[in-house]
Each structure stands twice: as C-alpha cells, then as structure tokens.
Image 1: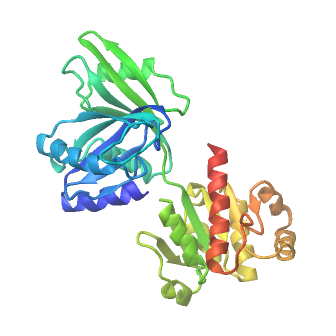
Image 2: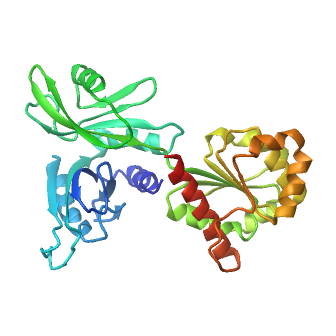
Image 3: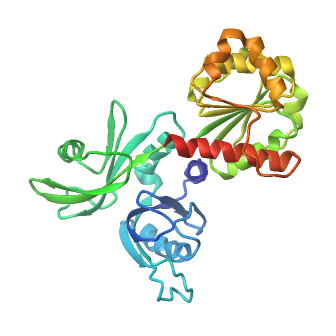
Amino acid sequence: MALYQFFKERELRGQSLVLVTVFETDGSTYSKAGGQMLIDTDGNFCGMLSGGCLEGDLVERSRTVIESGEAQTATYDLGADDELWGLGVGCDGTMRVLLQPLSKEDDYQPFAAVAEVLNGAAPAIIATVIASESGTAEPGAAVVFREDESNSFGIDDDIVGRIARETSFDGVAVTRNIEYPNGSCRVLVSKLSPAPALLILGAGLDSEPVARFAAELGWRCTVIDHRPAYIEARNYPPHTQSLCCNTDELDTHVDLNACDMAIVMSHHLVSDRSYLERLARSRVGYVGLLGPPGRRDRLLAELGDLATNLRDRLRGPAGIVLGGRGPGPIALEIVAEMQQYLADRV
C-alpha cells in the first residue's frame, strides 16, 4: 500500500518516476525476485531493495533512466570480501534489477495497472520483459494477467499469448525465455498481491497505535465506530479511512469479504456482539477480540449457533504475548499475530 500511495501522489502531480524491479538474485540478498521500489525525480523513493546500501546508487541511475526514457538493467555484487561505494556490505549475494521509466505521457504504465491490483481485492500475475532479441518487445514492456482478462503494455497479442501458454506459475517469481517468429525475449513472471486490508472496529484511544503499525506495514486500514466523538478525537495516519455508523449497518458500509483481518475493540459489550455477529457471516480470515477469556465466552454464548462460524477464525484475547502494558505494547502484540496469520496463509 505504501507503493500505491507514493505512486498516486506523484501521478497527481504529473511527476515522472522510475520503477525498479528485482528480477534475479543469487546467494543472500535483502530482496528476492519480484521485489519493487519507486523513485521520483527528486530522488525520493518508496520501498527498499537492500538494507540501504544500494538505494543511493539506484537513485543516481534513475536520473539517467528518466532523462533517456529508456529502461536499463544493473547488477550488484554484494560479495563478502568486497567494499561497495566505501561500505563493507558483506551480504555475499548478487542482485540484478530492471529500472524502467514511468511518465505521464505513457499513462505511467505498466505501474498504473499494478497500482490497481495493489489497491484492489484480487491478486494478479505480471510478466515483465527483461531482455529482448528484437524490437518487438522492449525491456520494460509488460502484461498483467487477471482472472478473466489481460492488459498488455508494449507487447503484441501474439507474444502475450505465448507468455500465457508457456508460463506456469506457482507463486514464486521466475524468469522464462519466450520464443516467437521474429526473435525471443526473457520475462520475469511474478505475483501481484493487494495490500492486506484491516478493519478496526472501535475508535478508542488504543486503536491509534494499531492503525500506526498497520500504516507502517503498508496495510489498508479502515476504522469504524458508532460514536462520532470517538472518530473525531482520533489522530490516525494519513490514508487511514474512518467511518461513523451504527454497528448493525456495518456490512452495508463495508465489504467485509474484501477485508483480510478485523479487530473488535470497541470496549462496548453490545457493540462487540453486533460486530462479531456480522463478522461470523463474513469470510474475514482473522477475527481478533480484545478482553479476557470470560468476556469472549459470554459474547460467543450470546451469538448462539453463529459462534461456530468463528471457531477457526477468532483470536481472543487477540495478540501474541510479548510483554509490556499499555496501548503501544498491546497493539504490537495484535499486529504481530496478524502478520503471523498473513505469513501462514501464503
């Protein structure tokens, strides 16, 4: 989500960007194939492909890419015995990246299509040309495959068809050589996943650190409360959505099935029961609940048969026990459990 917001802000200003994509690694590297970052004309960037040792050079290379309007590749050898730009990196790995220009004149494609996926509900597959033996498909050209359609940028339909037929994908980014009558091209095939969507049900003071952690992780975050004063008093991170509505209207204002996780934390028994009732009828994979086990058991008993729908999804009390007291440590415990849930479902 951080990439999406960074991109949308520059797109609104009409500012050019460079998309950097890792397409090959060997040994120990900070990022793996498919990793991405964006760099704008001022040298600001979003996303990291290393621990900070490569980003400065990538910023410098991006200036050339923007000026020329042509994509280029770069190889970084982070061998343990070498010093890189005065730094002893010692990662003992090699990383190869593609830098491609994004401009208003080209409608910021293909990243504009990528951004739609990042801010959407369904994953997609992107195939990006890394190298080509003919002018039919230049480096940086790409095709985005969705469930029932494909959008190509700089690749003709014949090559798109060949990529679709000759590429199998199991979730791990791979490179493939695609042969066609006029030549061949090498493509990186990787998965695009929407940013995780978190629903915070309850806008108490302790909801703020949860939203801040979510923002730091690049999650899409929506906060709901039925009390206007609670919503108005909060200081959430930019791009956090907040909404005041009655608990029994939750599923009319929010597409619950588009949410990956929800945390019920209104500290109001009747409201929490109403939230849990609607979540029980949804497909939200992680449902967290604040409060002691006795309160959880009472709420589940009041839900009756609906409680069985939450059996494998409800975490209550929510969070991994890490120690500490107060809103910050509790928020960390909750978000850590959510991150574990996301990692386990991959």
